[in-house]
Length: 484
Image 1 (cartoon, one colour):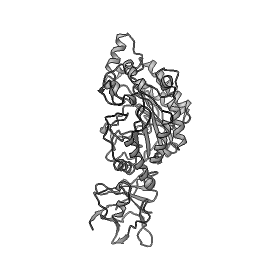
Image 2 (tube, rainbow, N blue to C red; image 1 turned 90 degrees about the vertical axis):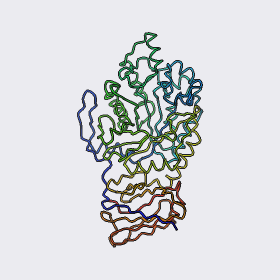
Image 3 (cartoon, helix red, strand yellow; image 1 turned 30 degrees about the vertical axis):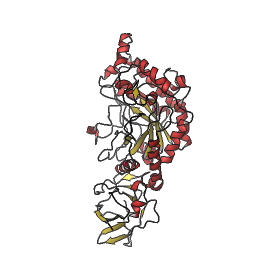
Image 4 (cartoon, rainbow, N blue to C red; image 1 turned 180 degrees about the vertical axis):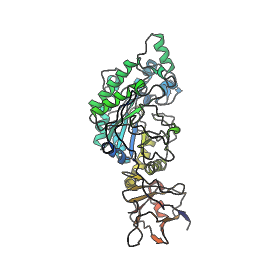
């Protein structure tokens, strides 16, 4: 029998709160709304989101029909209009006929989210191309006007039917609206031929008009579709941020006045999910409730800060027929474990096709993750990180109440592999009679984990069957009652 011996150094396994920042009333200024809630009120509002841990992101819009190319030229997905420099009329003429949402597509999204173990869903109500998936009198550039479908209404109904909290992604930049002034921040991407078209036609930019349009649409989203649990803003850069860019303080105040429980990310301000220089910087709660590292999980998490990693199953956010580099279920499960161990959430994206159907490889990944969550979800939901726990490379852990969840890597094991874990007991809550705590593999009640106390060390022997019987070779070892 092949044996691997590892030592888990848990000598000072005291849990630090993942949400330890003090939230006291803070005055606003010209660029920020004031914080009026206290610590207790904020924690109550954030509680469901912190416990949920796993959400589904949905990128769906006109770009879905283009599927990664415009008249034979590849140009990305949801960014194809600006990547190819297309003015909005040229883009829409090609994309509108290809966008064909089928009846019941939002039901399929919500059913898959439920099967996967997600607790909330976030849909793109309007992406950067300015095409709205909801009913609004402010624009003719909507799924209602062109397709007779209020997809936000269908989505919110389906999500709630399947027990999901409801979130909306809303782009604050807009390549379609003629008054939107991208010149406030020239680095903020904008289709070159759209700028040329507006200039040639003598159409002036009037950003205040656009800001009023933005606020009116957001008010409609806040009032027409019941409780909106999350507003996921995207995105700001340079001077196109905060008060100057979006009249952000008034926008946030308006959302909270209509839906007091709403949770918002901080992308109304210039926080980039790709900017690692922001890692470890304290979240300014006047800018939003949580921060959003994109396509990555921060190396050490953000202790004391609410955060959520947004990830894709493939490489692209929107549907792209050329996107074939899909993550395996094991990779996604590992991301869930890592977010849990570091105190964050995972928002995992699906990218429906033109008819709203989900690519088969994406369905497969979400389904397999759901199987793992069915057996191991108690190690993810409502968990908190154990910051003082020091594990060998590849091993992670979280706590659920007083129980320790040890996330074991695959280690390249075979079905015959046995893993010996030696756990120093200093700082752990051990049974008063000196016996070893109860240990098991989640979802495998018949898999015995022998545990012994020897000279101040808890010895665990994990048999190869723990890996052989686990979904995607990702077992979770639960040690009961030892976490403080």
